[in-house]
Amino acid sequence: MEQQRPLEGITVVSIEQAVAAPFATRQLADLGARVIKIERPGDGDFARRYDTTVHGHSSYFVWLNRSKESLTLDLKDARGREILHELLAEADVFVQNLAPGAATRLGLGPDELTARYPKLIPCTVSGYGTTGPWADRKAYDLLVQCQTGLVSLTGSAEEAARVGVSVADISAGMYAYSGILAALFARATTGVARAVEVSLFEALSEWMSQPAYYTRHSGSQPPRVGTRHATIAPYGAFTAADGKDVLFSIQNEREWAALCDGFLGRPELTDDPRFATGSARVAHRDELDAIVAERFTRSDATDVRKDLDALGIANAGVNSVAEFLEHPVLEGRNRWREVAVPGATVQALLPPADLAGLTARMDPVPAVGEHTEAILTALGRTPEELAALRADTVV
Image 1 (cartoon, rainbow, N blue to C red):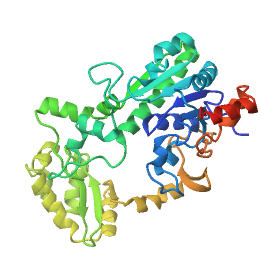
Image 2 (image 1 turned 90 degrees about the vertical axis):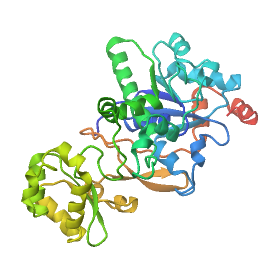
Image 3 (image 1 turned 135 degrees about the vertical axis):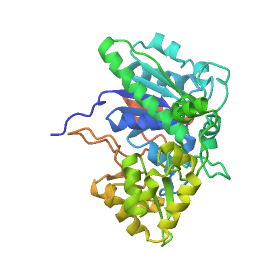
Image 4 (image 1 turned 180 degrees about the vertical axis):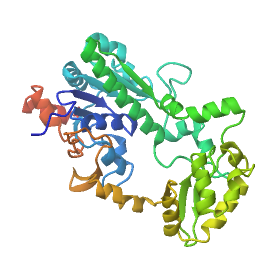
């Protein structure tokens, strides 16, 4: 018999949109929590309309919202707020990433909620924090990538680029998720429910710590070097004779000696003053890259990878997304599962953290307001009251 998932019995109410907060709550749902997603009557979460590529549904929404219940509520209407507070009175966690100041105006700030519901854990996901000089500024993923300096590190020497996934949102969602887990543990062990706050800016700031240390103490930031590593060499992608790119990494002096002797065929480079240390190799990157690039032109990608594998040097083909989808590790480790979306099913990846003896929850992605009637009926609303709420577009 399968064991109970860790968060079964935990109820999460979330007024969420876009990426950061939905990513946090989806991970709670993966672990068995009941997640009630509050959406606007009619259109719902605006991420539902980011694109229509997944059987008419948004790829973002399908990724972020499986295993949740969708309840539509107009929170500007007193009846909608009353329903929300009935849910919060029985909930364990409340998550929101509303526009700056909106939660406080609705009476949903952490101080108000903690006073009213002592066992509730409120979690706020903001752009730049709820205090400080930028508390009132809206923040989207790429804006935060720019503000933290990430964009200045990404791309080629000629042109900066955004990271190709919503990395600020994802980092904030991860810290909200782990913060909520920590708060649940603290409540279980101390009886005190503590509010959680995460901002996109501060989450991505943490991920920027290494280049921040490097810049502060060297006087200049790591250069933009495309697929090369800014502070390790050789570490990057090179083009083989068949036109395919292979990325490899030298991490220590043993690997450097093995590369010189067994791959480059030039053992004398091991102690060449230009390349004898990691710092020297970075300083003479262009000369070193030219030597490596010439060697790559003499073998196709398959042979390059075989040679590097034989030397114990980490390497990888530079995959397209389509190639990633067919990756042998995902297939060999049985990572794909079917998940229902309205009108279809899709393949979804299991969450990356496996808990021995447990399976992740992989329930359907909800339609807008799909669970409204069931939730309100459980709260005691009669069919007549439901009809009146629908007629007034409160739900």
